[in-house]
Image (cartoon, rainbow, N blue to C red):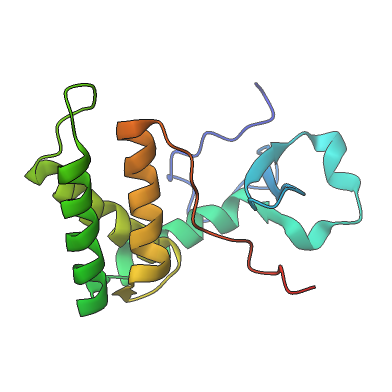
Amino acid sequence: NDDVDHDSDDDDDGAGSSSKPRSVWQRRATTSGEYSQLDKSDTAGDCSDDILQHDFLRKYLHFAKTRINPVLTEGARESIANRYAEMRSRQDERTLPVTARSLETVIRLATAHAKARLSNIVEAEPDCAAAMDILGFALYHENNSSSQPENSED
């Protein structure tokens, strides 16, 4: 696909960036708030507030990786421990085994979720809940997303 810029991070000086094609991402109109890639013909709409440019995403991810170092709160630790114990008691011969590696995975996923939110603390809600949803889907093929849309108060 010629419309996508496969960024190699070697053009940070901005020289020649006007000639390179850039991919554009826009929030879908669904309640999940996911982002999808748009074609060039789709970007002419009147919803420019919802469009994320490739450069912005690259800078956002760089900022989150380099400047945000989340720490688990006590509430997050308790939430992870309780849900981990629940998963251990729920395992049987049909599911993947729940091991200490699974616990480490939940901690890493929750920390990554906090980084994506640009938060310096990992909270039970929404970080640990999102991590448990991901792991629940991976282990049990459950899709019970606990995250609700933020602007549902309309």
